[in-house]
Image (tube, rainbow, N blue to C red):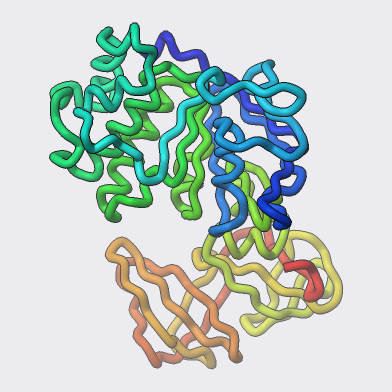
Length: 347
């Protein structure tokens, strides 16, 4: 089946959408290459699911255009959802409880192909080829999610849209199923657009990540690009653990509560330093105080009060400190320098 999948590009050009008087999307533009995995990341209500529904054809944009490959599907012409070569996996999976697994998968196919090989091929891809006659209620959550994926893949779409596809699974199963789906879609080479509010999930799944906020794209980049070079203070805080420490910049360096640090970009005057947990280290004794320790097994997060500012420090599996301990925090983030945002920069 993978040979029959033809990955297609998706182009969004100046798309806006309102519901009643409230703008949900404001002049969104982006391009997804054939075979690329793009994650739409943002807080609830930022418009990411609405954008997915516009691509699928479940909503119409108020302005702008959407193209799949070189074909305009919304804008100066309208192509109905079933003719877009786009598959959609819903957040709640939307399986029909009265239909068997096989009939659920066949539902999106033309009647002439519902008894053909596509159903069994799709189920084999997701590892459920022996469950053709099972009913959805007899399956685990992970199996139901894979049935929904098989149903979306059976018509061999050029683009697959996934709306929070793993959010209904418990933590351990979510990681397992997410890895399986990611591997499958990479093997297929299909264009995939994921919606998620989980930064870790977006970074794992996306070749690139479009960070959305209040109906706009705040930044689009690779996961590494977003994390190491955020375009704004808001993006910096949203895409990973971050603390902002007030400082005074003096060109190449800045003076702050943990000492003098080198800056990534020269600056002068009041500024806020972006400090990631893995860029800090602790030593016993000092003027700072440990306020909390979160132990995860493979590592730990230690929260430290430094002159009224809370910094988070990632340590090894044995943090060596406890709540109430006096410590010194130092910057160990390497030679690239600390990213800073001027004190009056937009949030």
